[in-house]
Length: 633
Image: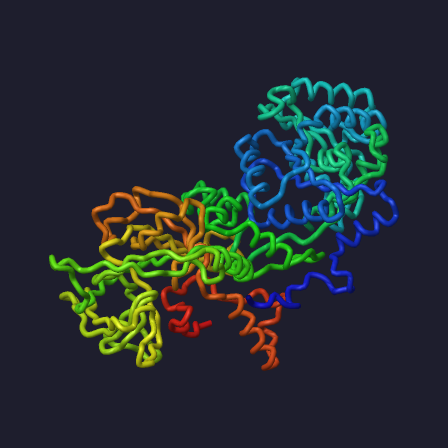
């Protein structure tokens, strides 16, 4: 397991082992603020699927509440009926639970529409809100800009009675969309642009998936956010840094409302901001993700190349690994980006401990053992070899793998002419067949174009179990699948969806940086025990990587499979490879530091790494096999 060392520490260590948010909670408990209660909330808008960035917020909201004996509410910010649907609600609930958290309650901002409306009328009555007849462009222009003054609306000083009448008419559906809005009357010269008379309500003649057609005015996020927190009794409202400027407005609204009526302590919740989670080579913008899906660049919201939790789940990322990753990067006050290889290292470590092992061949090459025995009828004998299910877990036991005279091996495991430091099969060389015997290459058959079509070997029956009685050694171990017993599979191999470390940084459009070959689909074969792997289970294909079973697919490229009589093959998504790219990144950083260079340490040491990260194939041998060759950087 590589060290996730001080380079990713989010805050200076004060000896407490806590981050600044937990320090705030500790101080609040010590001062008896909120009468010793701790309540957080995770407030997604149900207009899309959750992604890896949301995972950090979920983990923080739920773990902070749990650590201090409190509760976390899942509240849907469903204030925009045009983009929201029950489909997203159900998916979000499912994703939160899959990640390992159970909400104390599930709430909706739409639950509070009546209360929000009543409070809006209260602000109007107090001269703190008014109906503005300007359109969106005029309102935006009137706000001015940073360093320039705002211009007050000509409707800012409407009488209270007229504002109430117009607002009630808006709520009754008597005005068209875009004709009027309700704005808070704060300060048009405020240095914080969020405080320049923000919009509280817009007219939307839209059907709401929960409230139906009851409303035709809908609150903005800022008007619904803090007030929903107050109604629910939230104490600590944790937001990402893009809402930092909204905090003053959050407080202003709460300061002008009679919160004592709610039955809580009357103390206002308060907002604290933390850095969001961003990964290199990754986009989490819902708008861009929607373009990818609707433009056919990916196969849907659960395409394993996407950063959505649905996609990571389908690809085989364990929720425990995601939680551990989020904990490791910590809680910071400044935004930064992280190498996806770090996340992959947590995934790999988790899967190494729990994933069953199986042998599969993704680019099959036929190997014939010319001295393999046959029975009295001339049929090659079938042996059953004992193979370990998981060397990290003795309780996982062993399995029996059929072994015969004709095997499938990886094309990369044979070379007619071996390059330097190549230790696998080549004419005259002997290797170990995993869980089988030593085998020496005697010949190779090529086609008319010179491509190797078949490899011939002899085996040494005295080397059963992989050890030679005379003590001779081999430098490589390769895996195999018995041709007679092979099961067809389809494997999807993935590279980064975006070539660029910062997608869109060069042209402004992230789609300009799409990797042209981010997925490769192969028709391969596997040992019969692959049938024991249920859909959603991750298995290690020995020497190849970790793969998540997706179930049977009838449109896989089985026509390319050596097992051509099977119409259906199970699909496996490569989760991560066996090579630990994060360890390689750390080594390069350490070398750069020794040389006095600064390149590897910029940005917290997390901007390096190969783009693909998962390019390793059968070269990544382990457990006595050939060591992977050093990759180019």
